[in-house]
Image (cartoon, rainbow, N blue to C red; front, side, top):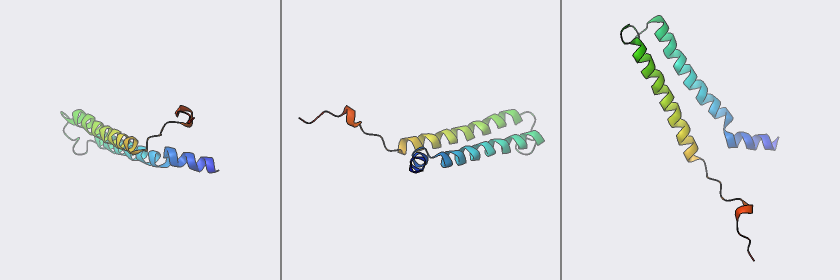
Length: 87
């Protein structure tokens, strides 16, 4: 039990799933709007270009969030095996 709690706090599975779900739903909302031709996808000449731009923006925001999360995690120090022995 304690190992699972430690792993969950280390890997942030719940928070990662929530972020992933939010990004997935944002892409799905754009796809639904595109499918029915709702604004801003009501201009047939520009709608595919707008969808690509919207999905790319969502992906970049998600990647930026992941990069910030990883860069804020504490760095592990050298292991005991890698430290020089005190004579």
